Length: 176
Image (cartoon, rainbow, N blue to C red; front, side):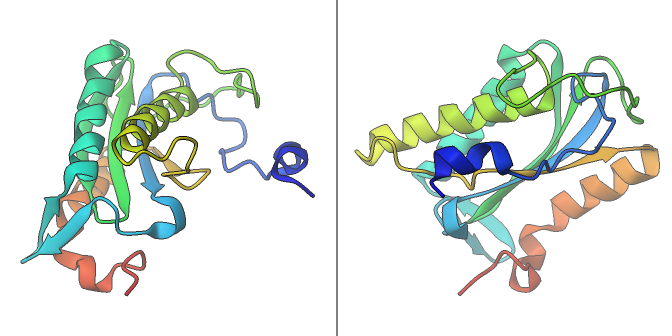
């Protein structure tokens, strides 16, 4: 079955019953295509970004600047993946649960799927222009997200993001 035919049979990675456009805190992880270490390297427990990693940094900051409904929190760029916390609306902490309103192919402005789709697209376009590879994938097709449910969850997620470069040797995404 081709990718186009398979598109409508993909399993949703979204939390059933969660409206990803509602105020709340969300933790996202995006991986580079085939988890290739395209964004830089870890040296002495610190991420050293290359030019592609710099583009990811610029576009993430731009995401927060362009979208007034989004507030960026802790984030880190690793050699082959990205972690970030973002808030929708003025909510800091627990997320509300409501019926899902976004459906495949029908983006909802300001929702997590739409924000991440736009971010990934902007990064991919800039990097593919730089490496003269139009149409090549840069990110894995999906991403992982977690609805942050309370202050303890938020603090634990922040700590995990901060410590991610120092724990790179043990990271399951660190492939030789």
